[in-house]
Length: 433
Image (cartoon, rainbow, N blue to C red; front, side, top):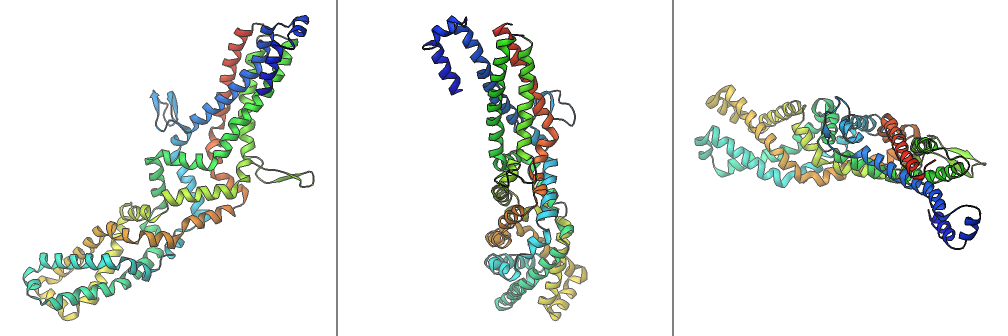
């Protein structure tokens, strides 16, 4: 572009007499100069538009949307439209290549977790026991000396580490029954399509910029070739034809350069190594990807509610009730238990256990927030993901972002070709021929 501007200035000043002498007026020169300029600008902006349409709008804008597509008399970004599918690819990558659910929870030490929760458990257990006792046996609870009440509460607190340890082991051994990671991540991406955009744009930003800028350079080169042909053969149909070629080839070549070749290809004795640009930045992309996943998905603030409210929550609650019941039997004492059975009956004792379990479960979301910092530090999922992603073979790492472009690559290429024809026809009208 700078070179064309300099030549244009020279054509209207120093070179003007010579150009006129050879029958080339300044106006004719400007027509010639407009071809590479238009080709460069067109390629830059049509690629920018194609990339924008890959990610935006987040929701379908328009009417008469074709079922199961992102098009119709309107448009939805390719990535938001495929949020569910992309999320499932991400989960598959994480669970088959990077980490196991059992490993996530095995990093949590029950003793440390109990220590973190002790201040809030002290208050929570006191309130639960006091509330249920007043609800089920108000007269008996009122008549008990404070020392006896405190001993009951103290025994429950002392038994908490044992219950938490047993519960964590039970959860680890049956993680597939109590937690659905796929459901959690898919729901998060479908609920917030902007999060998926953020992930792909952040990880692939350098490559997206390369597609746009390299396309503009290629457009300028094609434009210069077009000028030479136009000088010797001013056929009007050549302009939309070149527009079609420029629009399709620039997009296709740029997309291929991002992901191809997958494996490094050494040239000139290894002095030059060719590899897809995205794959060359594997370490950098791994760091960005792991950070986003750890901040927005795989952290205790997201995992705990997903476990407690997910479709497998009932299985978890059954485990909690079982461990609470065991703890109840251990800490209530045989004599106290017999007294309670006499007063309440066997069903009454079972109801008391159930009420304790329900109260504990309802308090878990708020209670567990006090352990979030420790759990995130213990799991350290950002570091795990970053290191393991960076060590992945290129052909596996390629599947991280490539599926987004691969399936709908033809749409970006076709869009470039169509716009190229339209711009070429506009040039044809302007230049004549």
